Length: 517
Image 1 (cartoon, helix red, strand yellow):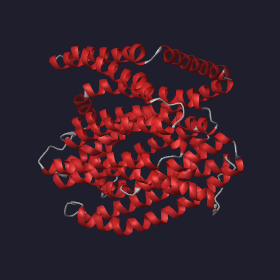
Image 2: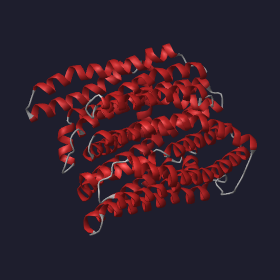
Image 3: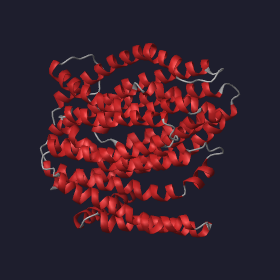
Image 4: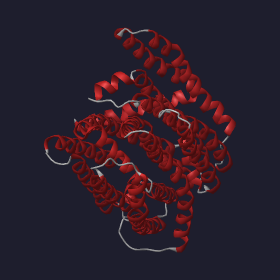
């Protein structure tokens, strides 16, 4: 019990720190994006996102290794085996160096061929596109090598440092965006240079911190056949899932470019940024919980793990819905206030992107649980097939003449289907997990409470054109979302848990005030 209380207090503290980071980063990033769009213009902004998409097709290697490394480091911390922890880190770091070399080879062969032959680049911007591509490759290589250090910080749950780096990165982005406005040169190339420099500084900070704080974080070429086989097997299957996610997220942008002008890519780029800023709500929350889910599985504390899965799923859903529903209602006003030029389709891209992310937030803790078990082969094959179908469906719908927003409609539907795929695999692989109870106690309450809030407010918002009434309805929608989430979405035990988290926050806040005094 004492251990659970300590874990809960640590989760609350980390969640608070990550939320402070998220709000600061979100505000700065949104304003920075406005300055960047103003400096670059719609076409160059779309070109930057498009060329970045070509590089991102290879980032599934990076993302796969990141999730694999964090899983194994958290697992060893849960088992409290420092010797094996050092071996795991060393093997992971060596693997990342090798993987960076492989990415470089692919980028300078297949990647360049794809950029020059398959991407629609306007005349006169091919040199700029090549420079942006090479800078993006450099950023990718730096981040791949630094991933074990970032994973180590998260596994040790050192979220304060993680938050400080995130805020510093956002401030530098704002400063670099300002430089775009005042320096008279090719602003697209300058933006690429500044972005690459930022990635170098951020990743260096994680490496230096880990070397100072953690004994296992030392650069050494190491090879342990057993550990390498475990990590390689896990990473290999995780690779398939990440390839599907990246192919859909960034490959869709390339498919859009085949059928529509660069302005549509700019709209997608803005929607990506809006969605990324907003989904920080749940990603920060889940980042605080993820090491605990893996550690509890390693320690065979299955009851605590099961409670974490259900609770994290529901809170993730409600955190995202409560914040985004009023935003979706007022998306046109917000975009016009934020941006000097709003590309066509940006509003619907944002709305549908957010809906897809809400569905993903509900089921994300399930994949964390499945990954904790290490049994991911069948799961990855199935989920990857579902995700890849998204890109194929979008391509053929575009061939039939469907509008650009079709890609986001398909994405939302696919993410809803993935909820039930993840439930089935969690039932199969995770001890003490019941699919029927999860649907009854998590999925249905979330959907019912959200639909109730929408049904009682959205029709009134649509039927009125009064600014004052729309503001009042927006406030009512936010209040009703909170009330329905609390009284319908959460059961009695979960409401008590929310109260405990709130009281724990007050306790932590008071302790800090007393220490300052």
